[in-house]
Image (spheres, rainbow, N blue to C red):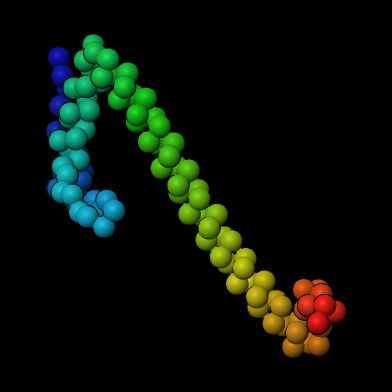
Length: 105
């Protein structure tokens, strides 16, 4: 007996465009959830495969979000370091990498 998902918030029942590598594919989340329920309720090897895939994709999405956050933090830290270097130089400081370059020259 397959359950059907009939109740989604109003904005989730509409077809949405999801971006995949600069292409857009129109998908119905309700339809995808219903198909997923059918596979998960089946007594087939596809059930285990789907469970493994969903877990793997979920982990990948979480890791990608974490990486995006780390990249943003690194960008902000790099910008902050650049401002700090400029401030030090404006105060007459000599940065170690600048001293090393002038010693070689």
